[in-house]
Length: 114
Length: 112
Image (cartoon, rainbow over all chains, first blue to last red; front, side):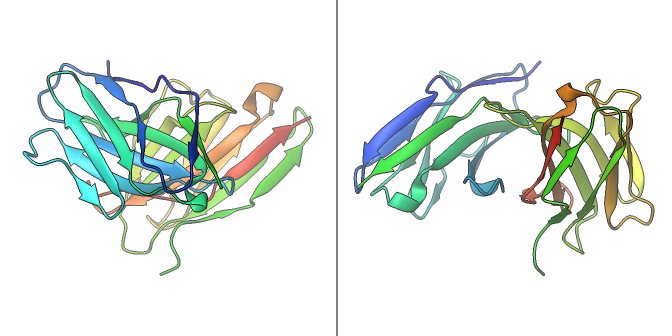
C-alpha cells in the first residue's frame, strides 16, 4: 500500500527566507506521480507542483521546486523567498498508475513571520 | 469557468439527521472525486466517478453514505443518520482524464 509521511507538523520561517518541507513516500510501483498542494484557511486545496517518477529533471513552478530523490523516496518541496501569503497547510500526495485516487500525507503547517 | 463549486460551505446538523452536499465540477472534466478531511489530517479518498459511473468506493464509505452523479455533471454526497464521527470537511475534486485535480473549497460538516 502507498504511504506518504510528512514529519514536520509545523514550520516557522522568516519572510523572504527559503523553506524546505519534507515528504517521504513508500510504494512498490516503479511508475507513480507526486503532488504538492497548499491549503489556506479557506479550505481549498491549491495545486502547486507535480513530479512524475520517470521525470529526469526536478519539477519547478515559479517559486516552488521539488527536490526529488528517487533512491531515498523523498520529494521535498522548496519554496524560495517566502511571502506572508505562503502561510498555510501543505500536503504531499501520491498517485500510482493503476489508481485514480490521491493518497495524502498528514500535512505541514507553515507560518511565515514578518 | 469558475472552478469546482461546493454547496453548502458549512452545515451544522443534529445527530441522526440526513444531510446532502452538492459538487459542481469544471464543466469539461469527466472525473469527479470525493474526499473527507478530519481536523489535523490529510484528505482521505471516499469515491470516484468517471462520467456518471461510480467506479471506486473506499471502505470508509459506509452504508450510510451514498454518492451520485446522475448526468455526469454535478454530484451529490448524502449521509444518512449522521453521527458525531462524520464531522469533517468534505472535499470534491475534478479532473480531465488523469490530469491534475482541481479541488473545491469543501463543505464543513459539524454534527452536534
